[in-house]
Amino acid sequence: MRNLRRLLVLVLCWAGSRQGQAQFFPPAPAQDSAILLMNGEAHLGNGQVIANSVIRLEGGKITLVADATTARIVRNGARIINCYGKKIYPGLIAANSDLGLSEIELVRATNDFSEVGDYNSDVRSIIAYNTDSRVIPTVRSNGVLLAQTCPQGGVISGSSSVVQLDAWNWEDAAYRADDGIHLNWPAWFNFNYDPETGIGALQQNSHYASQVDALRTFFLNARAYLAEPKHAQTNLKYQAMQPVLAGEANLYIHADDLRQILAALEFIKTMQVKGVLVGARDAWMCAKQLATDQVPVILFRPQSLPAYDDAAYDQPYKTAALLQQAGVLFCITDVSYWEQRNLPFQAGETVAYGLGKEQALSAITLNAAKILGIAGRCGSLEVGKDATLVISDGDLLDMKTSQVVMAFIQGRTVNLDNEQKQLFEIYKKKYGLR
Image 1 (cartoon, rainbow, N blue to C red):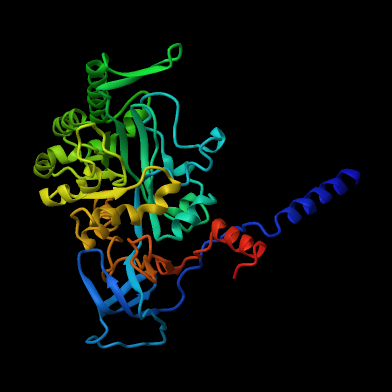
Image 2: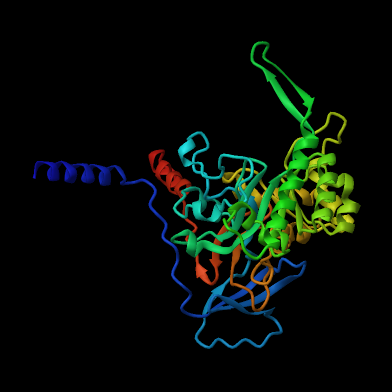
């Protein structure tokens, strides 16, 4: 009885300590009635803009996208939301993210994106995805509604999956499970740090050739293993390569240096797989070859510093425009899971350096959906696709004016509150601000 009292006291103390703090944000219920979004400026994600639009959401799908000035609109009991003066966009897609796999970077126990060992093709990031992460609402409230959760580390990190960011558990969140395997291409140079002198220097990777040979051997062995109908023992690492080697899933090759990229392109041809370059810092140097080989690019963080002393100061800003001009299919992403909230502003940076505004929007919506293999369901505001979209008071790509006021995932009205907003409101009271 005494222990029971102590437990009750502890529970009451814990509950009291939670007063005024951030609360859990439960997923929204399924759409139960039709919705008409009226009079908003719709940016469809495919390059088209409708200045005065009407969009009907029904059963979690988009059933009408039209010009409100000419379309015949039948209400049929639908709830009308007046979007006059607002802009409507497809839900943003964060490619190559560890969102939901990491909570506090400096606390190892909260980081579930990396496994020990070099060849981990059998690792599935989706089963480690944490829908209760406090980071997810902060990203979602800025228009990012879908994300590709990716493993890291080793030579072959494992498989990624695409999730929607409003779910009870990873099974509900899964939008496209196991969309591809992630491979970290061996580096040409390694950074060696001498702790005695405190000096570090780049040195050529003397093991580069053997590391590439080991990669080829792994892929050839996996192909040979899968060619046999029966095995005495199951090799999970080889078995996990089946979708990639069959062309059903992507092989995401992480490479930045030009020599890495060229070697990766040759590897893609030799192994006859659907390759996607990730990072691709120097992709602008071989943009024509990328376009010819039809290899898409997931471009990291345009808001970066140049990689070389003799590079143009604005090279990272204009790389996206150079890829667009060459005809390369690409999307834009940030690096860290919590920084994905800045995804629209990363895309907006490229507009000032040669990319069209609608092209920049496509780089974080439809292009990303095409690369991740989900373009039939999302990425643009088109009839038949999921009703996953964002409504903003200003330009979503402009940090100064962007203010997301409403969002839908598959027709469900998403809660845009988050812990940071709640803390802001709390401390406004402390200082007497309205």
